[in-house]
Length: 609
Image (tube, rainbow, N blue to C red; front, side, top):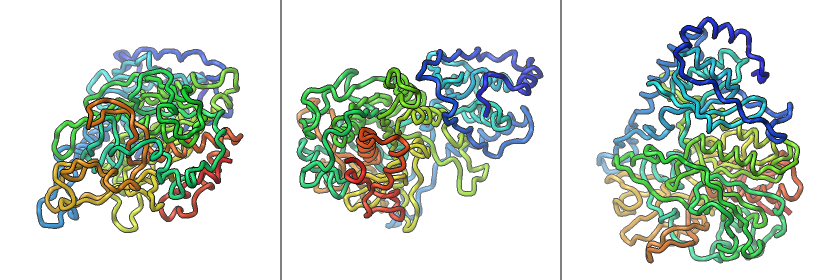
């Protein structure tokens, strides 16, 4: 891939031959990326993200690519709209099992009529002209990557679907590898992926009942928080008999950036004091957390409909990010936390908003005067969120099985790589998409995007029994995330946690309520199936808002335990590469690859002293 400012000669000839066709294009000249600062321009040794591999690429020119992408997108849209048949094993009594009424993908994958382009703006424009695309660049959204490269949010002004437009850019760039150009749908993001058991969803398409603000039951006070199993020898071994096993002064030189939801307004927040000083390390009243609001669009399509009833059900999980922050703070109480609100209160956001949060990290949280390679030294970025994107193809990768989506998210890879090149460590939840992997010997799914990036530390959710949480995808390392349960209509009242048809079995559900008592699962004798964290929401008993400790489950909450540990390691003098290499070795031997816990459950005492 060529990153020079010299336009390839063959492309100029192509554009000249297609000048008449391009005359009607309404895509304006792309804005010149903002001038690069000393921190903005990566050194020549900085890694460049490769372009996505084309799927069955056409071998001809413009017309062949256009025809391929048109047909490809039609097949993909049809595949996305398919409603799966209920599993034959779902019914044990001969009754008709529950049937979805809406496809599990329809309206949930991306923002309509928007694509995200990455590369040299002039080359991106020329591809647009070659296919007579009607596009409009949002100049306010452009993100500079240095060396003239940029990420742009682009609006589709004609009736071409997102799948076709992204295909045209990526197929043309694949046929001409000299080009620096790629396109992604503006994917929806949310905590823990789009289909799994866990935070905030339960069975595919069904909704769990949570407390206002989020959580699966009230969990007591700061003492209960610090004494939870996740911090003990069944978890990350941070505490033994209530005593901290690593130095309390570690972490002062580190910062943890969390991209997530937030129930709090922008500004400084005394997290340690509000939590009741559970870690006893940070100064009382110190502004140990800063909240930044990245404007998020409010989309009707996300989180969308209950796929079984067809009804729109929206939940408030605004405390998801605060819950994540409290766990990271417990591990590294001396590290400054930056909570960036990139998701709406219902947990929904989009790719471009995530990218802008990462850009703000790259520019505004970098160290003034430092070299590019050291500009984010001591920084950990926590991503307890994932892309709403299905596996791209059926087994065998037959063309008719594909969803017509790019194999990778190039813009996100580029921003993650930029943060790595600046010295940051990026940690991400592996995702909760493996709730249906119940056949003995069946492997869990691989990590979702962005955890699937090899340069990102992907985190599996482990249980009190030191096994993989039944919902959790695979990853590099594991940390406590809690577990799910198996339900039938004989163990719950219909209409509470989820709706089950007679005889139907729901596997690996992370429920809110199970029966007529209105008691939440985690607080009803099942505390060791859940993780405790800090939240702000409405007290269902008093009807008044306030702070409280609550239970929750998911890989979203395993990730910050690893992020906090990484912050301690960075402050002890380790380089980012050393952290990435060492973390998988400092694990509890109870876990291992055969248990799908990555290299094992992290042990803080082996990693930070």
